[in-house]
Length: 506
Image 1 (cartoon, rainbow, N blue to C red):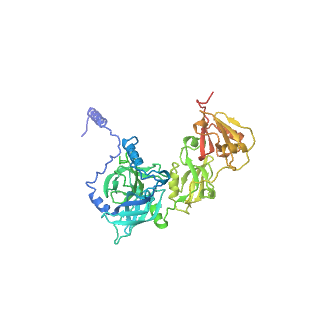
Image 2 (image 1 turned 90 degrees about the vertical axis):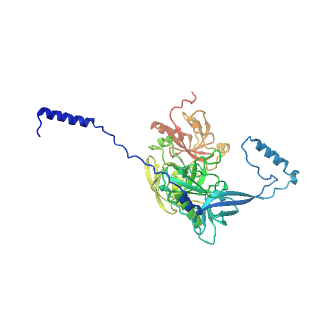
Image 3 (image 1 turned 180 degrees about the vertical axis):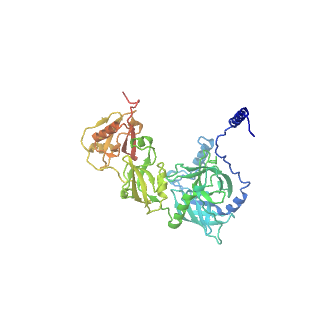
């Protein structure tokens, strides 16, 4: 049907108006749907409970010198505290040298564990059985079995026990803890306060938690109630796999406030396998001493982001030394894994197969350098011991000088300075003789007797050399200068601000 000109125009206007009147909705992300809580955990708990055990450990404690047994612990200032002190004093044997030691007594502790092999292999925390001379495993049916220690590892707080029964025991498996996400449901089973098998439920609250318990902290945080006695017990996912070993809680009162920590299963599996094979944990070792890369350090070295682990010492003949890792290198990647911060590196190295040749990417002299290292085995003795990284060279004899703007007074290392500041005979570098209060050096905690070994990753053997390196940095318009300093606590990289300090004395 043909429309006249006016009607055609009117129809077009109506069509345009309809389009303009149609609301234009923004493109939204699809809504997130949370899976509902299970109707009940009963079926899962019924299946898992038989493989979770209670662990009772005891040791013989002898009090020397007539001290007597410990009295109960009460809050500071409690009237009961003084009451029991007075009671113990009144009943303590007297007579000076004729005092007799209190008879030995048995101290007991309770914890949890779980069976991972029908032959009777039990996993728990090291602190549950530490120092014990007798360990008893109590099964879900109240059967008591004497346990022997296969191996334990203090650094990861894991221990493996062996019990023997006349029949195969119910067991459970480790799962893949890396697959668990924040918000996933979890189930904890253990022996809180010695009550026996108890089940609690919650979610994964966080991952990768560092609670300052050791160099390999990478805990799963959960709000499933965990109390004293739960240590060593399993944390399950909804498939019934162990994704963690309940190890610690944060609590001002000693009871659960919904902040518990579990060792991830993927870390525990490796340690447990090694304890079963060798009786001790075998960890990868690089042989370096490291420190955190701060924004000041990153800026002074031309590194865009303050990430990685800065090398502050290298063990002689260790894997890093053989790979030509240098003092002052910043390790950015190890075996293809990013080292986002200092504490990541020990865990990544420890989990690497011993004897494996791996690439290491370091930041050196303003650019990335790739090295190759063969991972060694961490020594049983102090693995953090680092050989002296002091450079060689003879100190020059210039007079003491002051570094203007930094608040440092420096002197060469002379026999008098060695005696005054108790420096080793092989100590090289430049000694700090005074630190001006309110200056950058004072802010960083430097003090008389500390020794500057390197400035901007270059060796220094005289105050003049330190001054020269600092002036070069000033001319390059950098905001801070980086120094390697030997203190009473060891070697540290210290960035000192070159900007005017308003607190500096005028």
